[in-house]
Length: 324
Image: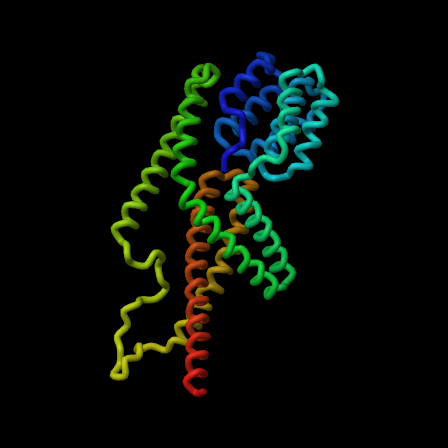
């Protein structure tokens, strides 16, 4: 998930030229929001920061215009074109003296709909479905919640496939962008920002190494199964060549595991909301990782159940053909 920007450097230079050394609170907030959006790529946090700035009273015109432009660009990247157009039109009609910002707003307005990253769109869709599912659960509509959950699983599989191909390339791009940002005069002067960016580059480097390591491991494992199975494949067989276990009991056990995982996920999501309210970054990161792990496990088990159902259907058809 990266912003669709002209370029990081041009945005920072533009903001630097428009924002003077004035110590006003709004201008400081705008600099912080730009750093969140452009430097760290944390658009959601930046979007809320821009909204907060725009609600401030006695705001200098250039600060308001730039905050409005950045808000519009974020909305555009999320596919909310109509809301973005409102921001651009407001700038063109009310801030005509801010030539550079007006020119940028006009270009964005005439450019048409931005190409939205498909991963981004899927993530937004999954978020909406998750919220909808939680609302259904609160109203004790479990069957409807299960249907929504199934839709989420399908979207997550699509996202997983896209991420597998896109992650490596995106991380390399982000490392390059951050390395360029380190050379910017504003960043060179600020040791705290410089250290933060260096840590971010280090973190991305570790992720890149991990992805490359996983790819190598996957290549070595081929032509084995591409995903973990919930049960061992090499079962001992009886005299008549049948597995020595009750298949229906195993299916029942997996269904129970899925049910328990869903309950655990709900509890973890509640904990995550509480952590987000308190801005507990370390706990948020731990809970998000745990949620992702559990959701992946749940998805694999659900896939296995689907396979068993398909196999059962095929066996029924074969038996019917034999009887005929």
